[in-house]
Length: 264
Image 1 (cartoon, one colour):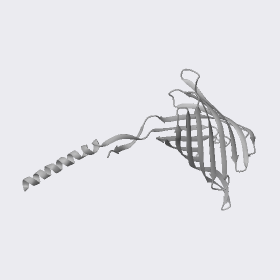
Image 2 (cartoon, rainbow, N blue to C red):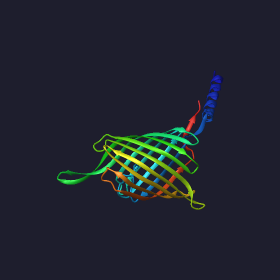
Image 3 (cartoon, rainbow, N blue to C red):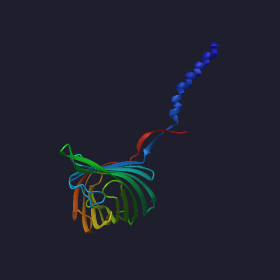
Image 4 (tube, rainbow, N blue to C red):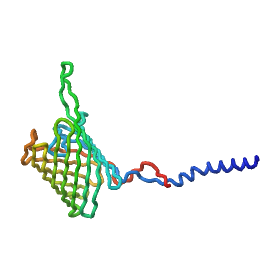
């Protein structure tokens, strides 16, 4: 009996010693995300996703993209440099079509837009930050003519749930010229666009250009937005809006590990 008990002890000890080896042998180190990257920008004049809207003062913008397969989550957070929030967009996007020349992306986001309002409290004037809720969706077809030239459209529709703007439509036609060489290391990107904007019952037509100057394998770049109203009923709006931004890019194509995944 004692001999059998001793054998059982030896077998049990062996199993417990081998258990970590057996378990870890079934684990495979896999990345959770296919890609993680982002951009942090500072500018003297914050300009919105819809270029006719501007903060009218210096701003910081944080744009992050996390990709898994055809899906991506892309938070876009904007602040005045004094620290007040401006807008938070939480994009969920899906690459519906991915061909050699043609791509189609669809997406949606809940958003919060912030503004400062003055209220009277206990007989004194006080500033409060008010948030307004929006829900928006987008559709983005794009056709690649060459490695450096593409044309496309962008359509965004949004609905508001609070006092103020209730519905909007934003439609652009655009061209994109990328990696245009200045020297062996320096290059620039240019994207001219024309767009239609509707805010409730008011409409407007605009042109805008996005310009970026960058250096290969260097995280800093300089960009500018130039927006001009052609014919608009939307007021109050500046006839011409522009800015210059300093951008820092991080992340890239490296796989981002989250945890080991057990094979069953």
